[in-house]
Image (tube, rainbow, N blue to C red; front, side, top):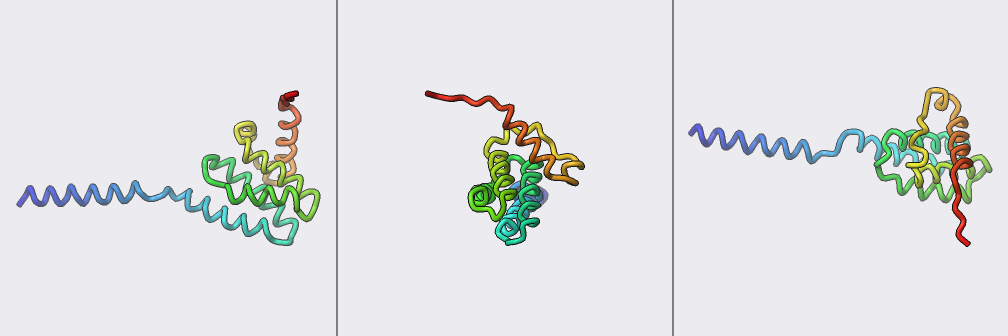
Length: 138
């Protein structure tokens, strides 16, 4: 009887442990929901919401660099070409570069000053691009 109880307990512990480890971490769910919301916001007509969302997407990428942002990057490409204003097109282009070449920009951290004025962050990315070596193949 004791061995049956021990076996049952061992099976239950294994089941619960496997179930716990199989679940996605909580932040993954939050990132997925944020991505859905940002994708929606990138499609609205209000310029301020679109520009703010571009920065917020980059902030999430900065905190969680290894997540999947393909849908957002695809929309950023579209905005870089078809955005309603030059500012949206410029910021979308910088954001696209930020996502595609994250290793180049990983040392740029978002501070409170940049949260207050996101243009500072975009300027840092632009400065980094200007200093990057360019190879030309003739």
